[in-house]
Amino acid sequence: MVALNDPLAARAHARAMEGSVADAMPILPPVADDLPDGVAAGDLLWEERIAAGGYASRRLARGSRVRLIDLEGDACASLQLFNAEMPTERLNIADTLKIQWNAYLGAGKFLLSDMGRVLMSIVADDAQTHDALCGASNAASNTRAYGDGSNAGPFPNARDRLMLGVAKHGLGRRDVHPCLTLFKGVKVAADGATLPELGPFAPGRTVTLRAEMDLILVVANCPHVLDTRPWSITPLRATAWRGPIAGDDDSIRNATPEGRRAFLNVDDYYRR
View 1 (tube, rainbow, N blue to C red):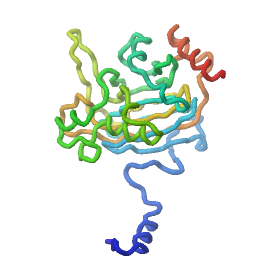
View 2: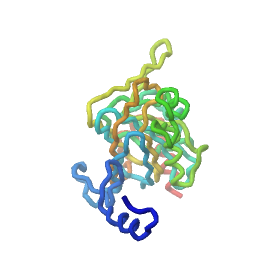
View 3: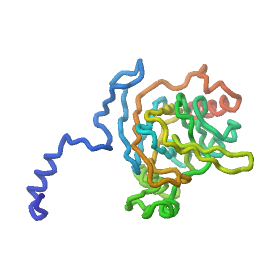
View 4: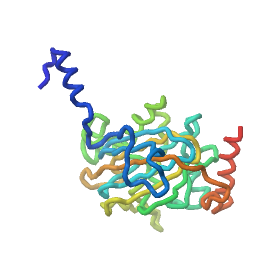
């Protein structure tokens, strides 16, 4: 044990830790051996393993791809998005569902801002169990389910983890808004009941998103608010790389009249 009254020994100990790799941390510089075909190693922007109960945030350029992998089958990614240039513009879940006439998001769908612009598109999805209805867990829900659900406790909640993520970009509690949850699904029955699809699922399920604007992305990996099992959450992997912006012939852009208008709103924003 390092003597607390010996700063030189403490410094030596700290420096000896250089190069150590924790189970969950960003990899700097980012390295990945499973990038898609055609993606060069130099295009890699972000590689991070997000712990069970952890969070991450990242600023991403327009055109970037973000791949999230449920490594062990029980991750739960609560996602929030902001226009990096003007963070008062952010993901609007209600409009995202209303404009696409669909409460169940997956490949080919897009995530809309509160100003009618596409923030991200879902370009690939082999999970197909997501939730745009229930929102993030909070301190009260986690305390009821598990015990101490605060940020400093053993069972942290998604809302408070998202608050830590937005704080890294100068934002605060009031900026934490309704989220999209990936890898845990909720369906609505004919009688209005919410039917959770919580797993555990097969390991390795993957969702890939494309940034349609310069973004701040924040993700928390905490149990779903409807999960009544004992604390069950496993690590999440995030990888991002540079890519081209959506072209005029993009299939997601042209799938619906509403989508074309939302992408035109993005074009108009960047035409300034």
